[in-house]
Image 1 (tube, one colour):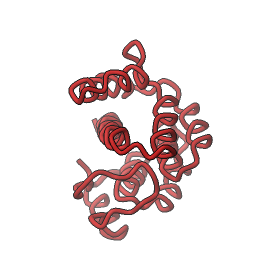
Image 2: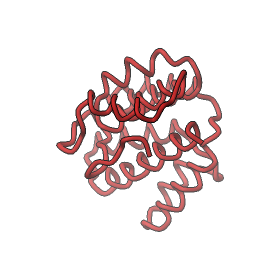
Image 3: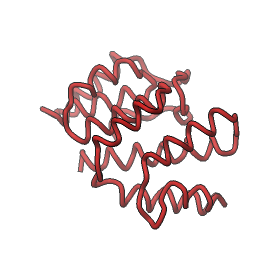
Image 4: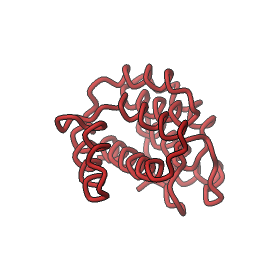
Length: 169
């Protein structure tokens, strides 16, 4: 999926993994997909974001006025971390078409990991709550809870993959 293959999961914050590929190589990989218009911009912003190039991803996503662009913009600000700004962008997303699959996949992962309480916070009644996810990330990072940070990193991967599948079809 896109050019996202790296070792390890992205952090919840702005840290850059040693396995992140350089921006120029990512741009070439996205160009090779032959996408055009908004899909090309979304693919580029998403790929840069996955590889921890937050500023470059921000530059691309802020020019995409759709709910999809706002979704990537929200993730970027959550990782920055600028939690209130992330919530602003998720408000602009509204009820994204990937939310049902995201709620289901995240709940399945968290239930299997024995973290039913977190699953209920992030997807109450089976509905994804991006604001609860922002709050959970903020709390986990603030309190330095390694177990919860790891779970949230996996949920972030699920969020990212589910989102990318929604716009690449």
